[in-house]
Image (cartoon, rainbow, N blue to C red; front, side, top):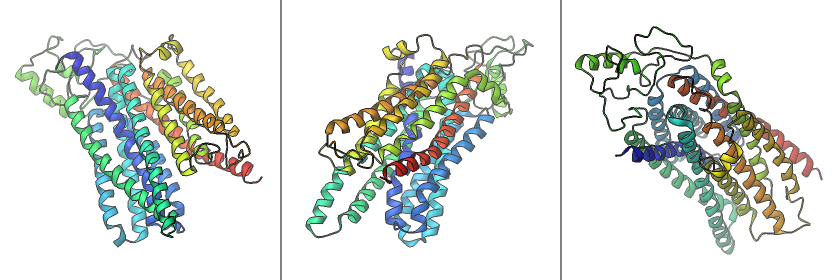
Length: 487
């Protein structure tokens, strides 16, 4: 494999890793309707609290794990593999659970599903931490964008399936009405079962495929200069152009020798300080000894924050604002288009996710919009960009929320709303994608261990933004109910 082919394949591998980061979460969301209707029977305590408990479990786990992992700044390669395996175990377990759920008590099922949610969220955090660390090391402009693009794909595919299944709903409902059956109950159950089978199977296959891609791409397992060369130290090879080579005796506050599977540069040097492309038996033994060592190095979080504060603040604010989108998507109804609300609402989710996908796509360094918007690469621009997105939110109140604009009865109002959702998704994908893509721009004076730590550290602000945004979404629901239901 040539150097250019290897780079292209590695880019594709990062895209797949981005997909597998969020696809399991979307699969868990697809379980909500099935669990509340079929398993917990709508009116029980478990049905009423399931969605909130699942969201709380997921977001709090993500915040805790991302913070914890940011303080353990080593072992990034192993985290990628472990994260994928955890997801694989979770969805095999869920598949088995669905097959035997009728023989289990409702309370036990409730506990098991939330425990598996905890494990899945933990696996996502571990996988994201390792992936973003290596994306920042290899080059955030290229590989962080690949991860962001993959995450957007993971959002579009389930939304597309949900939108397609909404038309199946209509067909099933029509047939039930003709037979004198209650359409709603059968409709929900049939769609949920089909979605569950499809999502679980696709998630399991995706996890296996991503493991294969990760293994073949050798991410974190070999040098950038010689991707084909096996240096016979497994995951413990050199990627670092160290600013403190062996024997220099100089210290640098940003140059820290990292342990375990990442950046064992000093282990790959000969005794005179030069790189050795063919290590001697003595050096091989030395490498093996170095690989077994685990030195707990830690860069203070405030030092990481000082380097990338505008990038991570832009990520945080973007996700806080973005979590308002489901509030409007679930409460804005069709006005003039020949669609039912059961089709129009999934369409809104799909349009937002397509916008998010396109926004992340245009963050490529060579794209005209990226060059135009950030040609000077000032991180403050990202921060201002994330704040300006708030201006889109009031425009949603001009749409048909809770059928408040039915007197207009115009498809233009529906198109206006869908355009707003597309713009909201596009700006989210563009701002978040650029924030991750440019996070390495200010790290030219630091070593690769610092860059990897920054990649993992940034994920704290993703989970924190999602957590704060989910809390504020309750306020959004309250405002909509207060304004529109009181009329």
